[in-house]
Image (tube, rainbow, N blue to C red; front, side, top):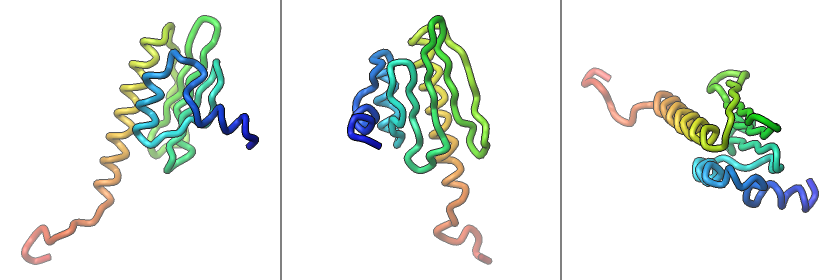
Length: 117
């Protein structure tokens, strides 16, 4: 990756309409892996295959959100930035909650649950 590509990915989103949702992704351990005026991709730092995609087209905004423990994504179409940002925020929060639940379920108990354990 050359220096210009790295600068585009590391900085603020080129499409300023998604600045508020950008901060939420960064706060939740995602990184901006594609940063173009018409397309943004946020990838989970721990699982690069979990990506949130935003593609701005002439008359619509297309999003793709990952489905946990699956190799498919959910695609939706929106008419404006507000609806798109609300949709992405809801699905990012659900994603984070589901990941946390999975992580909590896979942890072994730290103490005995029953006297016979």
